[in-house]
Length: 118
Image (cartoon, rainbow, N blue to C red; front, side, top):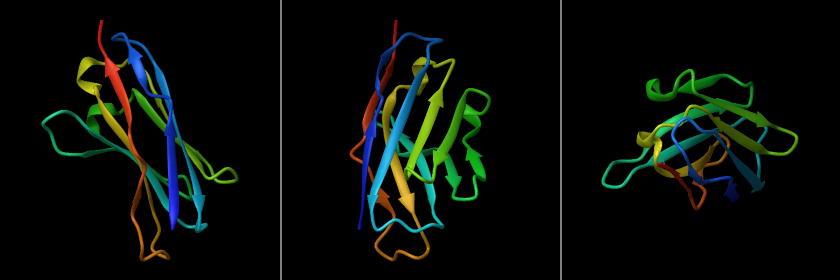
């Protein structure tokens, strides 16, 4: 079992920045993928960015060049640096953890609200 705790959401003006953090605890495997998804009101949950334990990354086209995902394997924590935020980035952001060694996954955090508005 893996428990994910997110932090860092909030209200920011267009063009501003936020940094999300997600700390994982429990039965963490060394080989895993952690990522961030988001779900805007009335829309399906979508992948924002993901990073493997070897730091290979994947980004949604809509955030490339603006968002950066990183992880600290020693702290079992993943970060999402969000710059040049737009109103369309407004959503609940969810942390995700998945490992092929854990049949109980993938695991999800409780979500953190990001609102981009003037």
